[in-house]
Amino acid sequence: MAVKYGRSGYGRGLRLSREWITAAGLLFFLATVAAAGCGFRNNGQSLNAQTGVNQKQTIRVGYFPNITHIQAMVGQNDGTFQNALGEQVVIAESIFNAGPKLIQALLTGEIDLGYIGPVPAINGYIVSNKGLQIIAGAANEGAILVAAKGTNIKNVADLDGRKVAVPQLAATQDLTLRRLMKGAGLKDASRGGTVTVVPAENPDILTLIAKGEVDAALVPEPWGSRIVKETGADVVLEADQLWDDGSYATTVVIATTKFLEEQPELVEKWLAAHVELTERINNDPETYKQVFNKQFEILTQKSLPQDVLGSSFERLLVTYDPEVSSIQKFATLMADTGYLKQKPDISQLFNLAPLNKVLKEKGLAEVK
Image (cartoon, rainbow, N blue to C red):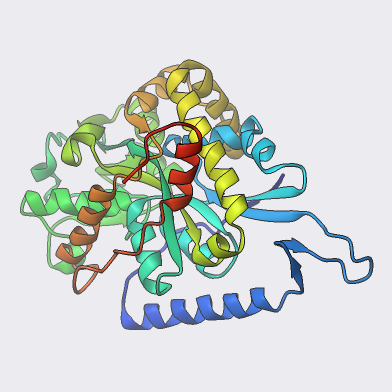
């Protein structure tokens, strides 16, 4: 199993300006051309020009070290994905902090499939001219709004004049924060408002809160629980208070349309493992919380305390249903908050046929 770390650091995310769209489209085009010129293919396998022997296939996967990506974390740690794909397939991992970075990797051909929030998935779909699709859900809820100790922030209105951190601009937590701010009559300082939104990696947000350099943060788990435990921060809004009583997608599974077309069997095998993991995690959460923690320690060099692990999992709904209606609402929100000039057409964003084929074979209800 090959592992590499995705590009990280501070960034402004996917601002959908004309210049950004043009650049992203060019990168996607160049990546497609480069992939097409890499050599002959035989049923998706590389053919050694000297020996004529089929070499191993590689599936390149990206995800985050968050509990909202628990299927990816568990499946990589306990070998579920590798067992489903077989010995002739190599899984190459890339680890990311936030969605826009993963989308960049997808558009430039660095990964084929990823676990990501719905907002960057929509962004990627737009800038790639429908070059990716959502193929399954992974998690609902799993994020909280916290306030630094002593700030006396009790509700969203109290964010007036404050600094609030999010993992990255134009990511799911950022859009969720902006929706909450709009409801409280607040705006981002960069748009003439009074709330300064600070993008930072999740581990850095913990440090910023501890040092008092930001006043609050909207972050995914387990980072929310870690911030509360390690800095004494207060929970302002629980996971089910952020959006539609918790009936909203936090993580979905995406793949490039090129990969879906060229490797349908690999996609189905991956989704079969994903569904299996979802059911196992829900049926035996205590066991799989510990498996998650093992992978978390591998990726971050630090395991989670049991109380943090427990509270993180309590804020999460593990699912393979992408909650289509919530993603449609996110698309509307992107226009309402100014990230897009108008609501995008996402009618072809979803490709649930492979998932529903797997569910049918397992005797489970299909997702509509």
